Length: 409
View 1 (cartoon, rainbow, N blue to C red):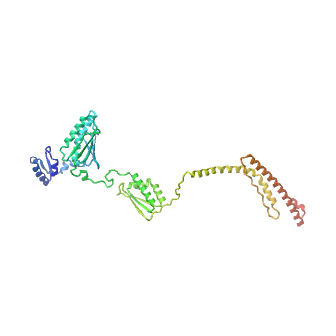
View 2 (spheres, rainbow, N blue to C red; view 1 turned 90 degrees about the vertical axis):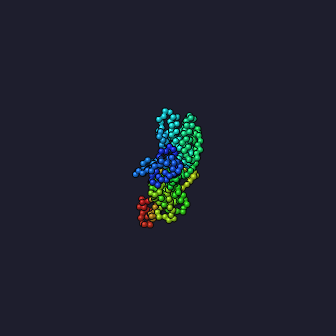
View 3 (tube, one colour; view 1 turned 45 degrees about the horizontal axis):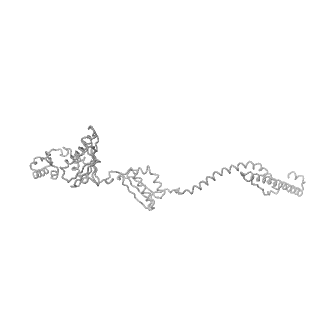
């Protein structure tokens, strides 16, 4: 209470309301000590409704945590606290009531300069502060904004150094740090985003998990892993990345289990490793084969052979009708070769050469074929004579006339 009166009280304040008897006596005694003539302005609040609720102080305190502060003209300012400096951006927003753009920018900047000076004291902002005002063409307008801003900073107890608005519309200033800022004293960094205010998306976190599983599979030190991730990430892995997980299991022989944990929030996840395997992994049947451009030559040769084979079959089908008429002669010859004693003689087979494209080779093959046919005729004649002699001899031994045997021969 004493510090608030010391830092904030000035002659423009008409009354100071204090809730509670003990607090009232402390404020009254302190005011009599520093400013006896203003001690009558300290009053005791005795209503049933709380003091902060009566004057809606809680809404103002909640607004201190909001980086955006609305202005009466329709514009707004955005306060961003970083490690290096405090950045304050002034925007016109819906402030379009003035006749020209220059007048609108001037009015918004004047209103923003007054609000920025107030927010610096409320939020205890310190260090290097950069304010981005709306650009104005006339130099006198920039001077008016600078003068108003410095006047509003005179009541601040902290030591302040203020520069001038540059050609880019930036005003640089520094403020002494009297105590920790309001944001630093009343907040703590988020345990999930670590103070950044951003969370990784489900697909990005899923890719990170797959890369870690791939790395663990390459090491060959784990037989099974258990992945615990947020529910949304687990659903994304099972619905969209199931094939990738199956490939990792088949390639490295490592079982992968995925569980959704409602207590986890992106980007948090855990991977537990086990030396023993409780889930059967399907072995990879088709190993990955890598090859170079040298294999293309073998593939071309195979395709060329596949094209030649149908041509050879077509030529053999053309030769088949020519060889068909000679089949009865071979059957007659085999019947003649068989004697009465039932022991057939050896057959003579002739192989026909495949026709070639050249005319000379075809004629030579035809001549050889005719010579083979004449030799075959002479062999048939000799075989006939031998059969007749055998028949006569058989008739003499059996007491039958030779004439009866000849017709059979």
